[in-house]
Image 1 (cartoon, helix red, strand yellow):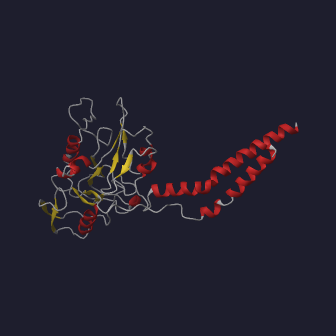
Image 2 (image 1 turned 180 degrees about the vertical axis):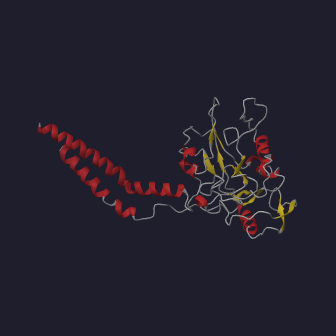
Length: 321
């Protein structure tokens, strides 16, 4: 076979295969979304109970051996203002106007930021070396620095902007909350929940946390309720009068395919800096699109055919001269 005939054959074949792409595009891109593990654990953060004491931040630092994070020049004490390679959990403040009334859009509210432990995590999907994995039983998204090659794709992929890189470390790694999995293995639970004095951060199975959150949404201002403190099932409760009007949704129940960290608040979540996400995870969409593109190697063969056709045209022009 002559080279010219070979080039024509490959080019025509690639174009014919590429012609099948429109029918493939008619199919839904997203693959089936991953389901929450039946024994998944997580946190329910209730902003209406948070007093901004940051005991959770200090406990997280202590029980995860994290260094201080200074934000002032005098560096007198640890006073992180955002998540970083030194801070895995932070309490931030929302204010509007005079900021006089708590848990109102025209007042102020606290908000806790940490890894959301997505049910179908984008960071796990984007990591090319499986340095980030999701435990099939607990659902905790963990990081293995021994496998990480430092590409930081996880940072780009996360819709919550959570994974942080240790830019100032000689041997840097990704840092994120791992839900105190080392404490869970020893019978404990997340330090941020254990040391929260008001029960604003509550640990438990995600199933139980969802049930608790749904019940709280039925509470009306003026009603009395014994809010569990520490973890679901704990004997310690905080009896108090409900003062805030909850936003009528549980953030994390559906966002991005669902998360194991859930949130309740009196202020709209977008005001608190939480992103508006569809119910389909980014991982499901991106992986579905990739599978569609590479189904039957259509796109690569079409690309190869196009390149070879261009070479053929160039060669023909040279031969004609």
